[in-house]
Length: 388
Image 1 (cartoon, rainbow, N blue to C red):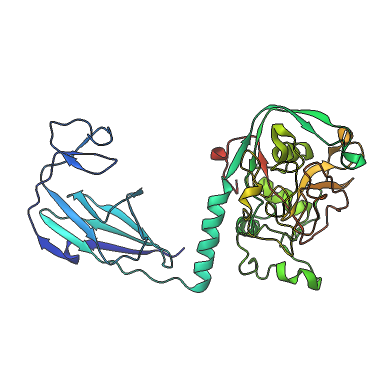
Image 2 (image 1 turned 60 degrees about the horizontal axis):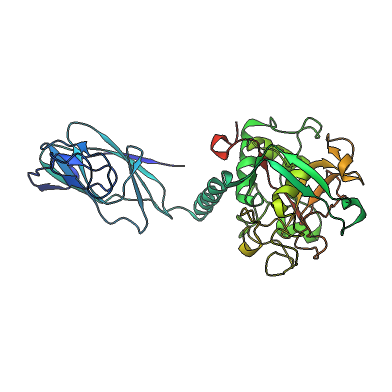
């Protein structure tokens, strides 16, 4: 991202003043107190020493609404601040619709400064990319912890391949709160373009194109052009991705695809209900309609632990290869078998959206507007860094 760098000295606008500063400052509420006070009376934070002289008051004016000021990598909560003289400060201003502005200020003794920075407007494409990055950054670490324990899977009331009810024990894991979005997937495609196919499955075709697309007319609305997701779908679940695409993204994100058992544990929880929210189907709790929707559009359909869209919207790839007996299902190697998808999609009915339902009709090379994915991790999302 382009950054303009300026050296801003006290000559920007100087207001004559000899400011006398208090000797103690609260690092939390930024209030000043007498030197005799050691802790902030308002919030209990330990007060820090402040020079009693040689200080300068800096004020930022004419900033766009919601603009953020970052001083030496620390966000500021107000536009008037007191700085010490004799040193240089790095200032960054970030505002929606504008390029980030980075500059330096060097306060001079006994002079106050008013700064009215010029911010360059973003182009339409830059605005969109900034929005996409914000969505992606917010969602990467948005995961829900599934506790270790014993869970009941399957159903004696479902299809034959869901029977019998079985017991499954897990050591615990983390799962994405929502399906992987177009915004997140775009960051993956950018890294593949820069660094190659280092995250890909060993059995995928050489130099595979991971761009979501399909040549059929019904898929054009969801196909990507020029490495960009369809307009208006940045926070929609990415579709038109096959199993190998999903695998590569998960590895790039520092995560992995869930097994069928892990996916079902996350969807049902300890209650083992038919649907993530209970035993009765409701069109008010999931997307079964005409097309995918933005992730999280049905908060009432969340699991007890807060996971969204585990029924409807798009069904999701797992790493489990199908076997009529779920107890005999095995890990898909990328060569033999059909990976199971779970959860039902916008094009399914109540039966297909049940948490124990098993969709085994998808080739690993299959790309559809009804299939997406989410990831799991054996580690806290705080420890994950995409692209490593």
